[in-house]
Image (cartoon, rainbow, N blue to C red; front, side, top):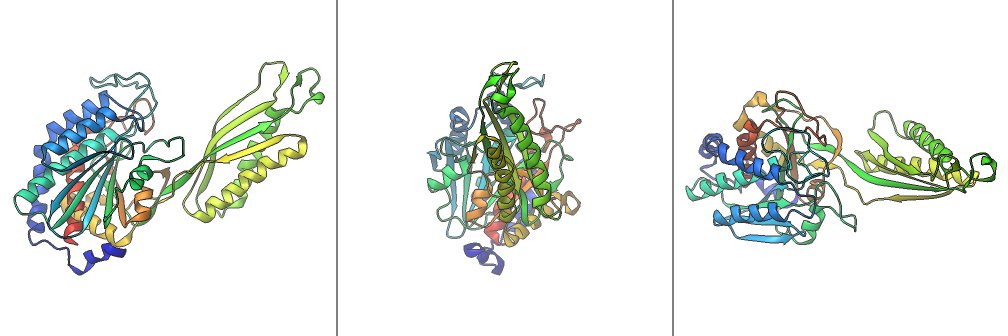
Length: 413
């Protein structure tokens, strides 16, 4: 765990932490109405990755109002605020701020007013919960119950997409020094499809790595009446796509997890013309780097064989995200704090999932823990869906969970 191992021998302990834990949930509940109002405001005004100007401004003002020094423009539109409480470790609490290019179909009163943009993954919840955690921890510092050290509140842009250089918000913030001097990091993800109030956490690899794929297949145009005079890029694309799925099934062990999915295919000029170009776009997801290599080999072999039929094949692989790996010691401290906060029965093991998350880049550099908080409304909602929504009554628990995790890592227990 590197620097973070100090937490295991008690060197980070604060004498008042146990009494503080008892009041965290009450303090969070007192903030409930304000946090819901903030979440609804953010939901009503969503912004895409690296465009979160309004959101970042709200966050910066909220942090400044708490008396915290604020840095803006970190990682383009990110915000950092540090809560100093004397010598000790530095713990990052992170929330992402960006929305998705989705037209909202919900009919509630805080529906998105930005055409074609929607908070369809809960980042408005994450941002609001971290604002709440900051208020709780500042109050704890002021009443002397916060263990010594520093909490860094990291409001991150663009988790959902990368820039022209293939870098997401986490990478951009790291490049701007967001993790300098940091000993541990904690992140939360709300789940609109899992039971409200349940917390899911485990150590080890918990979420997948991913990479975007673009396959361009060039052929030769011909009249549909004389297909033999051309090279049909559309037919060959279909052949390559089928071969790819078959190869993936036979290139990785059934014990491993890995998937290649193509979501778009574009090509052809007219119904009666043999297509001279087809472009496919997709992703591959994996939990181990060896599986990533095997998946990529399968994709390349499946499409490059089309060159024997006269096609021209170009395959581009994006930078992608690495898997989210929870460090065992940090995760143990966080898990214990969450159980103290929410109760033993509310904290459950987290199954590994094939979704990707750029918190992975923080966890790649410092010991970290990423956990999920269930918030399914009456009708569970899937992420990245036009009708995604969450149970807002869980917001105080989200704020308290982040605050509790941060304080526990300062305390070391």
